[in-house]
Length: 186
Image (cartoon, rainbow, N blue to C red):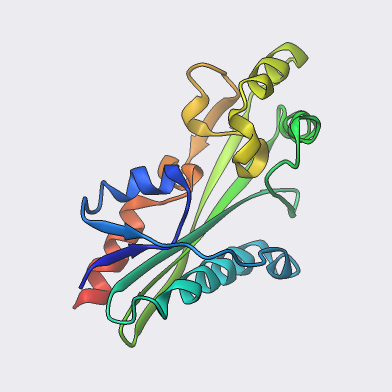
């Protein structure tokens, strides 16, 4: 049995190394938009399940780990920005507010499956136009749900406080995924 991470995300791959240094990365594109009609938590769990299903036929005897993360402000899902202007709009919308980050994950091994989620609360600082412009110009927000990465906070102080798992805000709640893997291997 080997671990298979069903994700192209370099951040998830880095965090997966905290669970195991020996894993395979395999990812198939799926249509995530079709899940956005569900509640935010059900949407991330559905996307995580479908990401895993897309690769499990290639690795039927291995342990498949898949995840998806969304940012939710006022019950509205905020995805990845389409361009720099959209990233600026999203950051202005999040400025000074509290939002939630939900990561759904699925662990599948043979006939066993665990689907769960983790939620963290994120409180943003009031962001100046200058800070937003510098951060967006760095390119970092362009491939992230909510147009930000908690790992960028030292250089671009956008986040006042995270309540809950910081790994979850990055997109891969290591502790909870590790516990689910141990449970499914029993």
